[in-house]
Amino acid sequence: MGDQTFSFEKNVETALGDTQLRANFEYAMSTLYQKRKAVFADEAETERLREVGNAVRQRALSKLPELLEKLEKKCIENGIQVHWAETTDEANRIILKIMDDHRATRMVKGKSMVSEEMHLNKFLEEHGKEVMETDLGEYIIQLAGETPSHIIVPAVHKNKDQIAKLFHEKIPGAPYTEKVEELNALARKTLREKFQHADIGLSGVNMAVAETGTLCLVENEGNGRMCTTVPPVHVAVMGLEKVVEKLSDVPPVLRLLTGSATGQIITTYFNMITTPRKPGEKDGPEEVHLVILDNGRSAILKDPELRQTLQCIRCGTCLNHCPVYTRIGGHAYGFVYPGPIGKILTPQMEGLEKTGGIISASSLCNACEEVCPVKIPIPELIRRLRNESYDSKGSVPGHGYKWNLPEVLVWKAWALVNRYPRLNELAMKVGGLFGDRFPKIGPLKQWTRVRTTPRLARHSLHELVKTEGVDHE
Image (cartoon, rainbow, N blue to C red; front, side, top):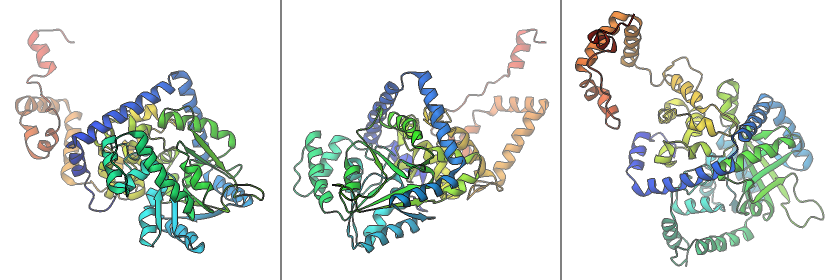
């Protein structure tokens, strides 16, 4: 995913033509939507909580370099080894070296979007390592040879029947069954064996507390706790923006994250990792490593407006409420982060020229902004990036890639027509006479292929008023 041959338009066409995919998403998104609505039923209290979440994230970003240094210092004091990576390739090589230093060949992984961003599994497998996803959704798509289609629910695009067939075909000796309990048991049996023999466990980080050097991990299945306690070495990977300043910042963000992501007051497991195993303790890893990844984030941080992108807590609720995402799914976007948050994050990481097409896939209905738990103004940032795609002097990499003379002339003509009343009157008359033909020629033909063709009135309001003899002075 995410290579130069990516075609968003073709992906969308394929997704819209897949009736099973659309049915799967309609059911799943409706369920997630209703769960969030139930857990945030008090609008006034929800808005107050969102204000707190926004303040926590903005404060952390405003002093991010200072907090990262503090986090590193506290982690080292706690016995956690800290590694810095500017690029995904550098992060991958750090993790490979940790494995090689321990002569490790088998890794079990908890859910981590940053590891997806790094394409870590592919990298390690190319270097002879065995990597097993242990989150059930991630395990399903790993068996299918796919990437996540959702930030929170990786296999949301598959239904029970599809998973049953997949398990039967991919898990040796697995009988065909469509019973959810039996499918879970099949996965559990396979994964428990991997936990027992893994050399290294890897996890993501939902929040890293600078005040205490604590790594917070949110999960529902217990696999994250197994990955971080059973193997002798635990490696945690995080984007550098995941820092919060104080331990007291964690409860409001956690409440917003779990309610927005899965419609829960709190998840089944909340892990707080501060040290490796201490003398006398019965479980836990002997070593803990933290890999902090930049991958373009520091450049995003420099822009006072676009830095709001980094407030994201990866809850995925903007996806669940987006009329575009809920119809085409995550794979159509072609990159790791889909939906509204992907539209503003991916172009800043990968460059507008390569990914700018996805920012056009928005109705700007504002649903994403209305539900964002940390109040990221996603529609405003989409508009900013759309402007950047036409601006040859913009600040985002790949800016100005859409600039072309005919389009510039069209918009200048539009501005001219709307500046002078006589020209506007003439344009309205021409539009009334020939407007029905315009959508059937040139680029407008493609635009109206999937939209209702606007009908232009034969007579303007001014003309109708005059005809009826109405005094409009």
